Length: 222
Length: 265
Image 1 (spheres, chains in turn green, yellow):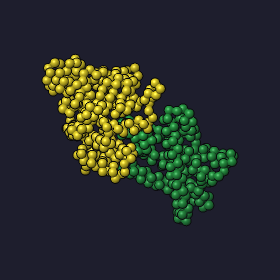
Image 2 (tube, rainbow over the protein chains, first blue to last red):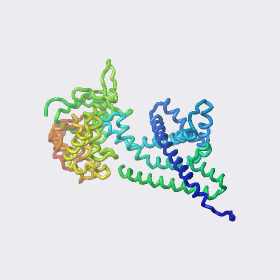
Image 3 (spheres, each protein chain N blue to C red):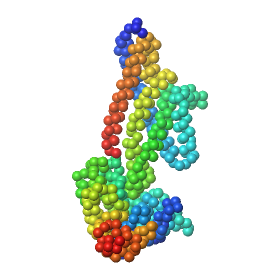
Image 4 (tube, chains in turn purple, green):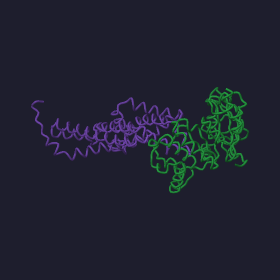
């Protein structure tokens, strides 16, 4: 370690690759959060539906995801689906499917808590002006729930962004995979991993700040 | 005022589990009439009000609005609940103002009023904006239309809530203890708005503990006791000649407000 001489030129030479990889990671996180939110919302409604044939399978899905490692899910989908002749997914798409399913399980719990915490009085006011059930959801319950759950959604986005590093395991060229490749070609271990860490840290922190601004804007409305 | 019964309740029953809260309420509200429900807490007044627009489901009896049964219909001798769409349409004809205002927190005052106009009554944005402006003006809040509920005082929020209910041009307006959650100095502004609506001929059914206001604004006062109507009549009869023992003792709590009642207790 004492003999280690830092040579940061390796980073400058590979900066394009690293930035592209970072952007891919961000994109993977945002897309998975978006798809996961849709899955999560449907799952949350299924959980609160009071119909066992809807809530039971969803409960199984949520517990399966929560109690198994994400990496396992990634392998299961990437290596498993082709065994069933489902091979139209490339590795990036396959990873998005995994991360979205993973996000969906966590988002369903966020939304379930959010739906449960909507004050009854808003629902009654919505009923009293004659809004139909779906209108009450669309114009009152969901907008209020979104504001209540925004801090949890922010946390999930940051977690998902960090979890995109697991895509390296199936050779999706995101930041961790790219850093490992540069590392393998240049043997500049510390420079590359420190830079990758710094990029994760700064990006995650910027996301947190941005979302906190958004939260503040909406928190005032509650 | 006409003799046309707008709301007609017959033998309305309601239980929560084993507790029977309404034990057969018969009540008629005519068009243009202001009817007030008074009584101790737990007497069933709020529950009855909530049954009228189906925030609670009555277990027995019938509530007719313009001759149209609310919430339920007899089909082949069986009592069946109407579809949610039909119930929603019925609710749109009845306005309700709540104790806790219940403004939508994510919408401005103007948007709170406009939501029902555009989504329920199908009015255009422009028309809804004009109607909302008109009613916010009537409750003295024209310049607050872009404020969110959290930026308004309790009294202002309640006035927006009244504007939201009345802008829908309901056949009947329900007021559920609308001043109970307000600081004393804010009560007058809300009662003033309600008084103006009553003067304009709005049909109103209200639950209130503001006895002076009730006496002043009502055409008919109903005293509920343990889920039954114990006495009803013109305000002068109810407040000045309380025949019912429980009513006398109830009015006695409002020390000095009513001559004979306070003397009797």
